[in-house]
Length: 118
Image (cartoon, rainbow, N blue to C red; front, side, top):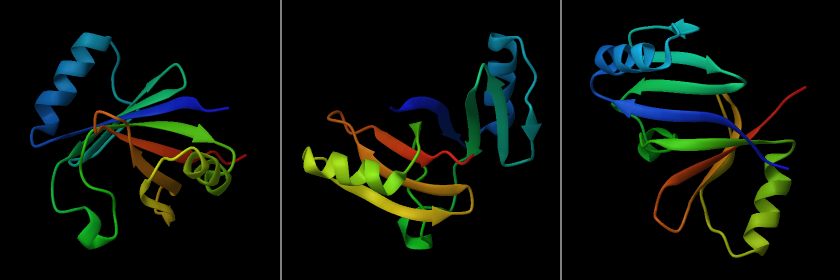
């Protein structure tokens, strides 16, 4: 089973975006820095990242908005999805935030599979 664990938004205006979501959601961020802010929303993270120098040339997925679903085993989930005809865009790979893989939905939106530990 896959469950929604994260929504990630990239922006050149982190402070303005954070202010909007803080006012809209009525909660303060659980964690923040100049480039990254995390809201905790009933088990789902809303991450706001600065849009910048990242992406495939640096070994990371591109800085694009995406949703992430948690799975027990990313590699198994990728094998299953490949058998159904989905093409992985990045990964599975170990990143600093954990093991993840990325693919696109039919409209071109990025979707992350993130391995849940524990």
